[in-house]
Length: 197
Picture 1 (cartoon, rainbow, N blue to C red):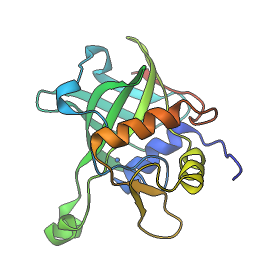
Picture 2: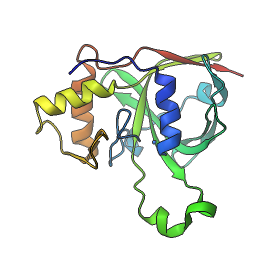
Picture 3: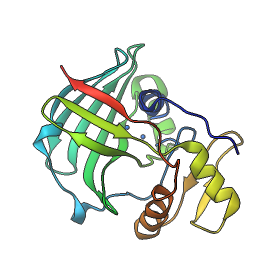
Picture 4: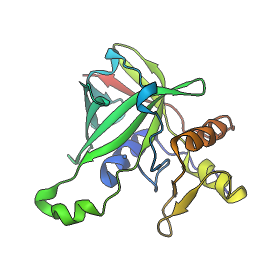
């Protein structure tokens, strides 16, 4: 399967549109958390208002004692998504596990919300300083290629044609799978950057 190069910032916008910073269509979507609560870390450097270095998309990150971080993402069109984030480690990499927290119930109603599964996704944080956050995401084609080659590598399902796989494994099994995937060449997108506003 050919590898396509997608800008990670576009992934973040897709996270808003589909509601995981949980997307089956653009990378990782897992029913189980990637960072378990008992392995959570906290880094105050992530707090604040961040702007995508290549667009007008921005994120506001605040502390949340229950799960680590509350994140509001606003895309270039003004679409807003609200997420929780939990910082931790996956293998030797620092990651931020992210999942959506709120839907627009004024439009869709509680019945719709009851049918929506809040999936987990994650970004790999290469650098976090007081001025920038540099991150990468899993390249969707690398995930799909591995599961095509080894369908029993991890429990997963395809929700509908054209969507990426949803990992249905436990946290421990999902973590083992992602650690293996991340060791493969070409498994991650190019780096993207958010700068402090």
